[in-house]
Image (cartoon, rainbow, N blue to C red; front, side, top):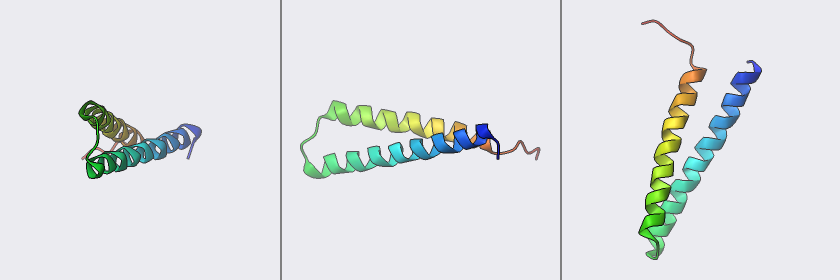
Length: 67
């Protein structure tokens, strides 16, 4: 594993953790019933951006396979 792969793996771990944290925060806000709808929308949008970034990083780690 080269340095770039290690950096990508590290970034993936951070992004996945942030995605889980956002998910937990959204659920917690929903349970309490007192939340700012705009805040929740921003959190959900950030989760979608993270999901796309995670997908891109995972693609970078996979070798090109010709089917």
